[in-house]
Image 1 (cartoon, rainbow, N blue to C red):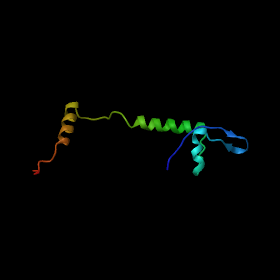
Image 2: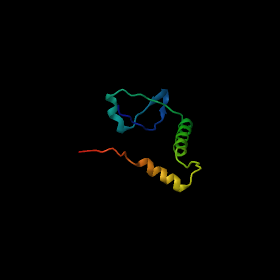
Image 3: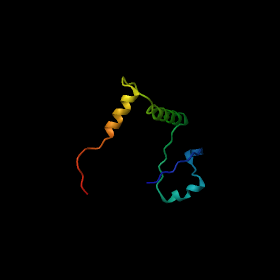
Image 4: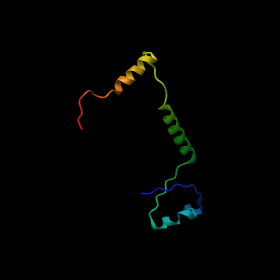
Amino acid sequence: MQTYQFETEILPKGIIRLPKEYDLLKLHKVKVIMIEKDELEKTQARDKKLFWDSFGSWQDERSADEIIKDIYEARKSSKRKITL
């Protein structure tokens, strides 16, 4: 399913006029979802905050050298023999 997103206005009697570039939609079913601008801005702000909150630092008792050592040790591959 392809999704098109655009902003438009509601005309008298609840008629929504699609932009001309979406004339092809006449051949398809159209589902209209209306989101209040304030609600959309709140949702976008929340999503942006969640995104940026997913980055960051952490607290650790180990020194930087110990953390680096642990990272390198975790990357070591197994010692099993592989024959090709």
